[in-house]
Image (cartoon, rainbow, N blue to C red; front, side):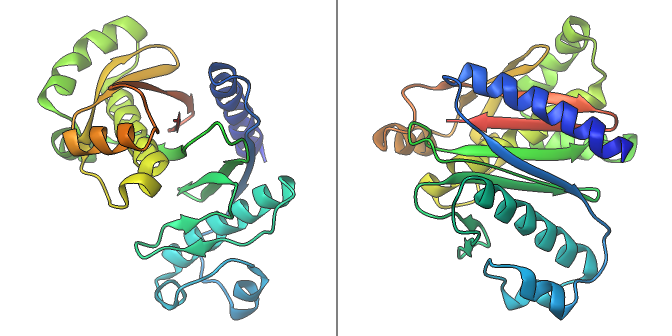
Length: 246
């Protein structure tokens, strides 16, 4: 219960900051804790959303993550006054009802969904990540960060007082949030070098789109006006939450 309360407090703080930066949009969310255990047939039947056979046949951890993520998404839709049903795309991405933009994340027995029905928003992405440990730090730093991002780490450590493990996690998570926010416009999984983080402050992450085809596609679809964008993050115990709205 303490973890759930603390996480809710952190989440509210993050979403309030995001909302303030985007004309006070109304963002609905639902958060829950869960155990990584197999989902029974009776439990699957309680979902309104489409569930592919590959998920039902998956390992218990994958079943539980999918089930609880969709359950959170359905609760956000109910709070919005919408039908609590998500379809599923060819790449297993959630397809929200017409007029709703949302995002789902799950990590370490935590599931979260956010959504909005305000039409001045093109896309929204949310991501939860556990802070990288020393065993995985170098691998993620090499695969998910550009050389320029790695070179900026010492300056960010000094400026905002976060350790390298946390900073690399924030960058990794921010990229995941951005990719979720634009998936419906690019219709593919983006590589980590599609964007580059150029600055991190106490709660914001500034980044640029590096992949020209992505930049041109988003501009042509009137999703963005320029190369520079920003996201938000907050920290809770051993996790970070990031959010990107476009």
